[in-house]
Image 1 (spheres, rainbow, N blue to C red):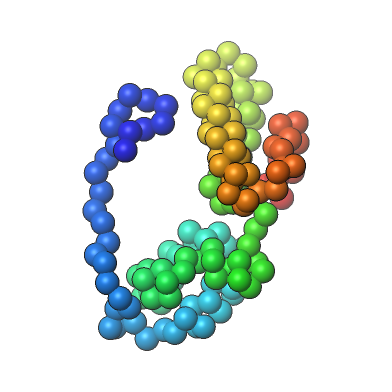
Image 2 (cartoon, rainbow, N blue to C red):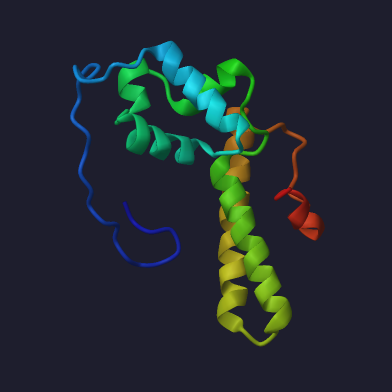
Length: 150
């Protein structure tokens, strides 16, 4: 797949093999859901939870074992966050760029980066509103961006 804001082509990657639950996995679906809830309450994101499960517990893929993603387990428990993780990461990046621009007003590259990040946020916002992940009234308040990070 091509990159979003450049003329470069994407990098080819490997795919996971299809198959059922690995024979060496000893965790049940309930245990995995409890682990995910435990780490969510500690403030970890879904990708951090997946890395912890992979590195600490030897669970290579939650989806291969349970048939559901980590986010679906958290959603069933009522612990899913209001703003999706990828949008929060883009908001963090936008805040960092804006603080940099406040100190360095002549940095044109940073201004372009702010525009590109802003357009990615708008694109994600449109997608999440259409899928129902965000409410139709939700709007990113550009004046109070740091509020979202708290």
